[in-house]
Structure formats: structure tokens, C-alpha cells
Image 1: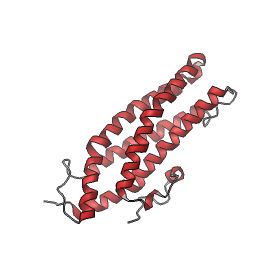
Image 2: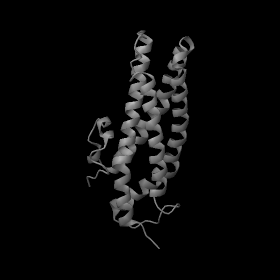
Image 3: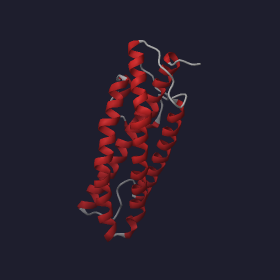
Image 4: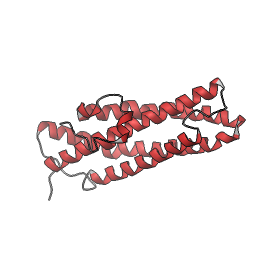
Length: 188
């Protein structure tokens, strides 16, 4: 099943691979094992570098604040995905693959937590748009130290990976799973 919620999505530019052709369980594994781990590993390192630079350049403080807020919000978001949504999506995938019916999710439908996830994705997209704006699209004109360039590159890479993650979930996973849920979940 190849399905995109929005084939013209501007987020598609961040997809490094043809994710819409991947099996759903592999997409979930990729999101959890690559993106979640990378956010948790690289986010704090990038924040530390930003804080060091901001100690010498107060104009970076708004970037530090936005990125700190992002990491805190993302940690809560990732926990919801890992503990609430994705376990049920794995069950849904297994039921679909084995052609068996499944009981509804404890909150009625996956569309309820998906709505929350997508709202949080929108908030992070906007937050990282502000970071890009604050950093002159990760260039910080006139601030040419090697550490500054490396930190801006890390920040941009973090944003790009996050946008890929959002693309995978919003445009591929969530739509496909909503369709599957309609087919195999028992409704009373």
C-alpha cells in the first residue's frame, strides 16, 4: 500500500529516502530507533554548544531558549509516541498482516492521539522556523568562527532530521494506519 496524505507536502523535501514505499513496521522502527535516539543524543550536545557560544554572544540567547524549549517539548512528545501511540500501531500492523480483527485503542481511535501528535509537530515546525529566522537560516552572517559554523550546521542537521521525522509520521504513517484502522478494528 503506497499512500501519502498529501503528495505535494512541503515536508517531502526533507525525506532522504522513499519512505512511502516502506513497510509500516520498518517505518516505525526507523522513527523510533533512528530519529528518537538521534534527538535524545544530538539535541543535548547541540544545546551545550549553543550555550557555550551564547556565553560569549548574548544575541544567541533567543536561539538557546527556543532550542531548549524544543528539546523539552520533544522529550514529552517522544514519550507519548513510545508509550501510547506506537505500541498500539505495532498491534494494528500485526493484526493487519495476519488478517485478524483488533479491539479499538483505549481512547477509541488512533485519530485522537494522532491529532495531538500532529498539533505538536506543527508547534515544533514553527519553533524551528523561528530558530532558522533567528540564525539567518543557520548562517549568522558576520559570525564566522569555526565553532559557530559547526554549531549552525549541527542545528540545521537536527532541524532537517526532525522535519524528516514529521514527514514520515504526518504524511505516511498516520494516514496509512488510519485507513487500516477503519478496515480491521472492531466497532461496537
